[in-house]
Image 1 (cartoon, rainbow, N blue to C red):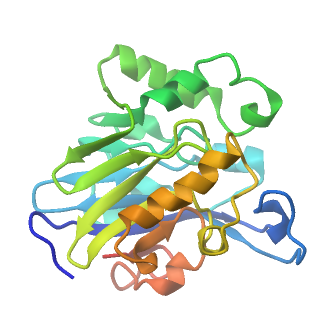
Image 2 (image 1 turned 180 degrees about the vertical axis):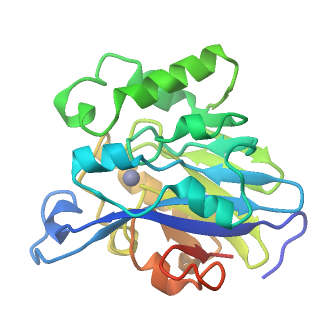
Length: 262
Ligand SMILES: [Zn+2]
């Protein structure tokens, strides 16, 4: 499918992984508690005119502290895709959880696109409460506060086209101001759904994930994703190892490391 206007190529970069069980991944419980590993990604959208990185992963140091298997720094893979993190002008941060906003200092030229609601939440009264506190690294939030004073945050309130062909849409739910990214590609509108749906199973079975800020909005987020993607095959979940199987390697030698989504 083609649409008018600029088209982006979209990549998913797998930088970390962990063993887990299905019972951890669904709100409430999973009656068939079984092994269900989880991958960690950043994404990139590239056209002739624009290079946009979506999320920035976490560092090896944070991985060691949290018991995650850090495979590689996402910026090293981006470099192999021809993207120099030191020069990337625009980074969209889907939300502020630790696995999405580490490595920020490796993007010194970037403006960071954030939702006002997400910033408000993590600088607000509930950020330090137990259920929320464990999902962020305070240093990342501090870094973003400093970036704001440096004039390098671009705030969005709900939905916006950040460059021609790339839109962000706030869904909330999993985190207070979670946003997703719709990208116009040669095969239609792809939605990088981030943690609206950690796995294909969450959205396909209408079962939200276990990390919740607002459960009703998590269901609403599924509806928003469906409304924005050209088909279910255009939805890219935030943490599903199946992404590496459903799409081809970005190029030879990057099997298991980076795939080309469109
Ligand atoms: Zn995540």
